[in-house]
Image (cartoon, helix red, strand yellow):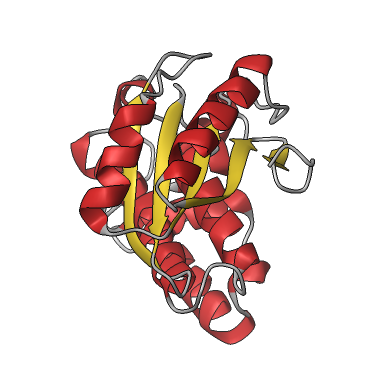
Length: 232
């Protein structure tokens, strides 16, 4: 007769969560592998059991930590073991990151905090599946007074209505604008349509004394600045 398993036998992952927490507190986030970061995020959604297999399954399904954290709920739900609580635990991360980046961007005039502006735009737009146009409205001291997504488009096109953009700038009393749109393809190279639209908007804004400081194109591969490229 086989011997009955001991009631004191503990699962192989016993103490794993405590060890991960201690490592984070003692050595910082750089000491954690990508799957361990996902494990941390899943701890709250799965208070018992081993989260490592699910964390590794997510990385295998999406290919990288950033792709896991920016995946849509429908895609996450296809991974076995991902319920509503686990999906919500991952979805809150990019939202928290965006709010942190927005606060840092708003602390100083954007012209003197350009890197923070770029960080914010990359966090909020680089992984969007469709094109969107974001407008940053600035006051006379180049501080952000409004941050709005003006249009959502398709995977390779966003309609831009010059009249609506200028009208909104006047409503807010904006002295300047920064245009930002993303390229879901990943490459930030401006298209001929992007250039033509920007020139049309610049001409309309100039007549009303509203400056267009820049038009940024955000892609997963980097960003392009119309100002730096001599297009503004």
